[in-house]
Length: 510
Image 1 (spheres, helix red, strand yellow):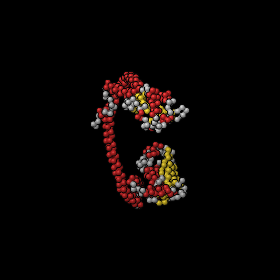
Image 2: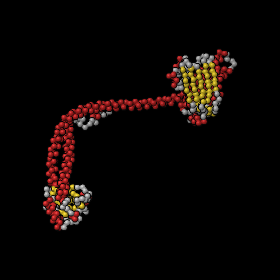
Image 3: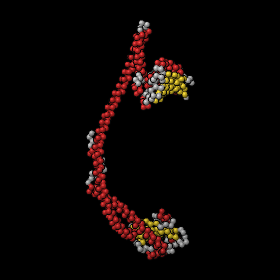
Image 4: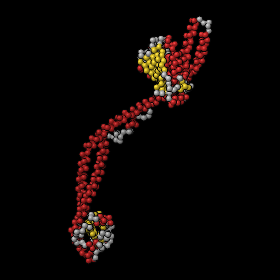
């Protein structure tokens, strides 16, 4: 247990232990950096827009110049091939007096194939213009522009210009016969851009500064709230640390308890196994001497030299030895069930005869207690496959239970019938009955009902548990219905169908 609450505090968010002034300074720097980045982005976007607007203005001016000064002066032959020297002189006059003014430092005519048919810089006449894609768009009717560098006709080298390409149409013709390229000194464009950029920078700086100042109170309030939350987080972290220590201690105790419980369970299983072995051993060891005792008792009772009182004593011994033998047999049966060594001898069983023999054997007990014992049987469609001795044991247990719990003057009825491929045996009595909350426990081993204890009715609580085991091993089921001071009915259902018989046989063999 080396962990401590301190280790939990390391999981707090960054800045949790930072003083409020430093936290406020960090937030202020972050906010300033974000505003600066936003301002630069806005400035760049607006600068681009201003440049576009200025270039569009120059573009419109170039279009107006071409429309006003050139459309009416140009001929179709000017765009078919490089112009003649005479025509070049005429165009020089036209361009230098009407076009190459107000910052326009160059001009040229372009044929539809991209050949420069005329240029103020005569060296370019007859060369190819490197504008194939833009020229196609211009000939389609649109005005194009781009920024580049060129040598002017006045001798200026590598001057930055804005070149505007304008389509030229003859009057009454919808198609362009060529294009005019005008080179505008970019410094004229840059002047308007620089003016707008300066005003923009001033306005944006003032706006961002005002926004930053207005954010300071908000940042101060937010940092106070964060500081309070951080304090709560540290307290929660400390509390979680203590809880973690306690939880780990409890977990260690639970693990130790689990290991102890597992050891105890293993010990209990071992004791249960030893108990089963003991019961099995004792049952086997008691069965042999009890059988011998009952044999010699039978010989003594047949000896004619005993008087009536001696015979009565021997009868008491015989009855108690029989009860003891029955108890040993029951314990041996349960021991065989637990060990998985219970064997059944499967053969066709005549349940009608089995019920009749059971009732006949119990008749003397019923007569002695003045109980009416009756039977009602119906012929079954097929014979049941099972162990007749075990099924007889079930009937004997049920009938003897009914007689034990039925007072003098009562009635016990045993019935047998076939319903939907099932043999149904019912043993009904008018005895003391059973409380509803005890009915689910009646088939448990060694269970004795409260009415049995109150009326001092003898028994071990094994009869119904044994009956349930035998019935279920035959693929059937046993149920009970009882009411206090009304009576009890035990219903046994055993399958007769071929499929159920096959399944039950496999279960019995297992």
